[in-house]
Length: 145
Image (cartoon, rainbow, N blue to C red; front, side):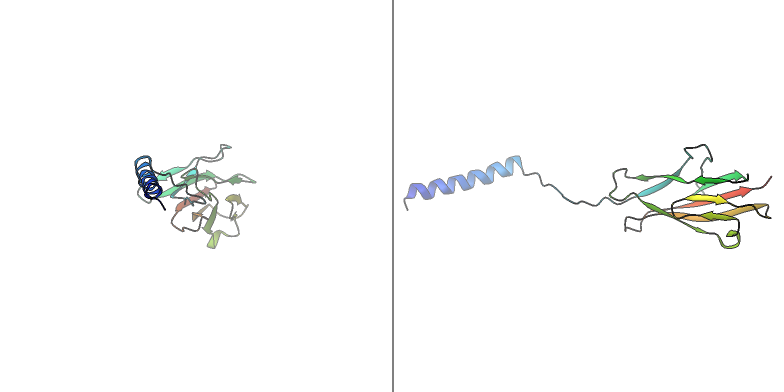
């Protein structure tokens, strides 16, 4: 091969390195997984309840008066909003109150009639994104007046 061809190839190679180094190459990330970093219980969209955050116990509290047929949905927000999987589960320890309150894994709370003055249940909202890092503690207090 002639020297000119070898020098031309070498010049193009060096020039391409300089161009890529100067302008850079954007790398595209495909199938990036964004995990939930925080879950927050929010006020009812239907006006059924208001959430009160307790800083000392790092817990969301809901207090309600019992009425016949009391049923409501727990609402939440996750951060970041564009997380790959924003689904959560609700996990409550019902123990002694299992005859009086039912809470589904999707956050539907149903309070049943019974002989009690109040119900206090504690639970967690947990992210289902596989990170197991995000959860939020909740206390629901139902009082018969």
